Image (tube, rainbow, N blue to C red; front, side, top):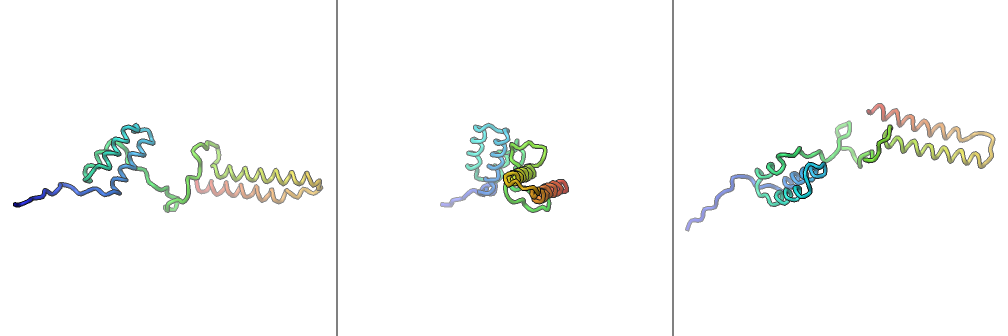
Length: 146
């Protein structure tokens, strides 16, 4: 008795390849390109897929996956979360606005203490000067990078 095993025409897909296709489908769903039901159907097909050549058909009508990491200006992956929250629509960058707010709060506290002491000499001028200088330097650095 001679048993012949048919060799499949393609190469088996790896878990990493399936995950990449699944990530593309998830991003498309998050962008509103697919409904949740369509995404579920495609994801079931992705993880039931056996061969590599079956995977591209599941995302042929979708844009490619977005890069997983942001790149800094030097070409290295940027560390940490995104610097500005999605809800921020201010005229200045979020970190600079937070820095300026901290300076205003500290300046207010220093002036309040000066008033409470009843001192004649306005000593808060020195720390307020350096706090303001730090915001200006921060703004100059951000402008140079942009």
